[in-house]
Amino acid sequence: MKKYDVIVVGAGNGGLVAAATTAKAGYRTLLLEKHNLPGGCATSFVRGRFEFEPSLHELCSESTHEASRSTSRIFADLGADVPLYFENELFRVIARGEDGYDVTLPAGEAAFVDAMENIVPGCRASVQALFDLNREFDEAQLYMDGGAMNPSVLMDKYGDFVRACGHSVDELFDALGMPEKAQDIIKTYWSYLGVPTDDLNAMHYISLLCAYVEGRPSMPYHRSHELSLALAKAVQGFGGEIRYNTEVTRFLYDVDGAAIGVIAGGETILAKKVISNIIPNNVVNRSYGKRLPASMKKLVNARKLGLTFITIYLGLDCTMQELGVKDYSVFVLGDKNSRAQFDARGEFGMYIVNCLNRPLPESSPEGTCTLFFTLPFMPEDFPEELKPEEYKKFKNGIARKYIEDYEKLMGLSILPHIEEIAVATPVTFARYLGTPGGEIYGYASTEWDNVVNRTVFKDLENRIKNLYFCGGHSIRGDGFPSGYITGEMAALDAIRDLKEGK
Ligand SMILES: Cc1cc2nc3c(=O)[nH]c(=O)nc-3n(C[C@H](O)[C@H](O)[C@H](O)COP(=O)(O)OP(=O)(O)OC[C@H]3O[C@@H](n4cnc5c(N)ncnc54)[C@H](O)[C@@H]3O)c2cc1C
Image (cartoon, rainbow, N blue to C red; front, top):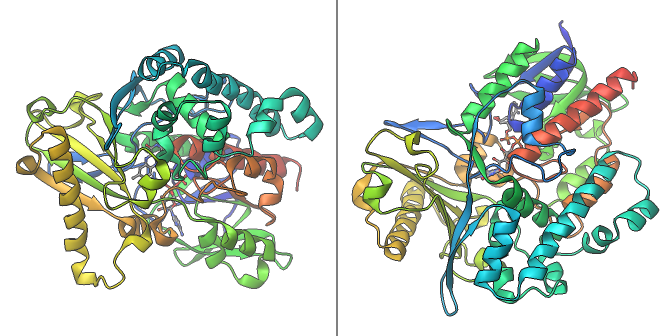
């Protein structure tokens, strides 16, 4: 039986980077993926003459600190060279109702702060404070990532970070004295982390916001599949092996509960280290209970699953100019408050519409364009009595409702131009990714279980020897960059333990 140094389960963003990193370091690496292609969420699909991006609205590829781990540095280190388009506009946000607004915000710290001051006179100092705080957060994060975390040093050197890090976005923005309208506008990105801002950790949100503002939103020219293909090529280039169409059905442990391998495609495969890019719930479900520490089961059960969506992909038989679309990314809010937006999901609480042809005119065939609608929708939002045979009608009904709403809001005529349509729901994501309830964002980063706490208590997170976790459900929450970064972190931990013979 062939024995590997490292088995990586799942070829999503995290698994691809983990496998490429251990293979590059010279370890015999096997990457196992249940589908016939790499990427997980980071992929593409084809309908008729259109190749759709299924997930990526925009990448925040750069960390705001040059010494931090970042997508671009990880790709460069692995020789995975993918050109990116950088966007100068962050988003347009349209809030309905009394005192509603329709504003477009630019990327770049100075431009962003100036624009906010123009929209809400008097907010400059409080908006600028977010960027200043984020710089301290970056430094504190680097210090904590270094491993030797001393609370007194944290308090002495990073006092504002320590004061702010336990608070929600709402609490922090209030404490900074930010005017309400400025708060509402700046909170627009909450859905990218999947938690309304009264519950969302302030530092987590600020770091995402600043990464987009300072690094600018970016995207690959050929959908996120291009990113995944480049990483798969890197894995193989470094001598790693990838087996597609190979689902891991069982994680294996020795009598002391240390991971020793997996069963995949009916075959037992052993390794010194196992890195999981699949959600820990599914690792627990694929393990003999007696071999797992009780703390692992408790952790998995205690965590809250994150947000999921309905997504609508439209291939249209006219150009975006003929359609009258001008923006790449439009957030439509039924209410200015993020909790109200979340609670009114399914009823226009909030939704996002992207037109990839704005940044990338050649992303669909000549004379055509695509639109991508994203709306929060949780598994419990399906009507209880919905029968399988009614599912298609149900999801298509929601798609029509939102398309018609956007037509009315923007004065567009979309329906007559639809050449291709695909509608994904949590059911689609559950089937494709295998996640409970079709969650796509990992565990919700809220209250006690936020990204700051997870980072501080990283070493207590996982008590299974020889098993490491990476991906959206790992310590840094969802998103392409956190998948890549935790993939590298898990690989470096495994490499360190291999070197030390642990
Ligand atoms: C609609 C949508 C919009 C999004 N928008 C953005 C955005 O704009 N910006 C952003 O940064 N992020 C966005 N995200 C989130 C981002 O896509 C994810 O956080 C990230 O891709 C998760 O990566 P991951 O490493 O956790 O792997 P995943 O994508 O979860 O992949 C896991 C892999 O494991 C495989 N697998 C599962 N079980 C097994 C098994 N038993 N055996 C073998 N293989 C298995 C799966 O097939 C899959 O390939 C979006 C996601 C969605 C769905």
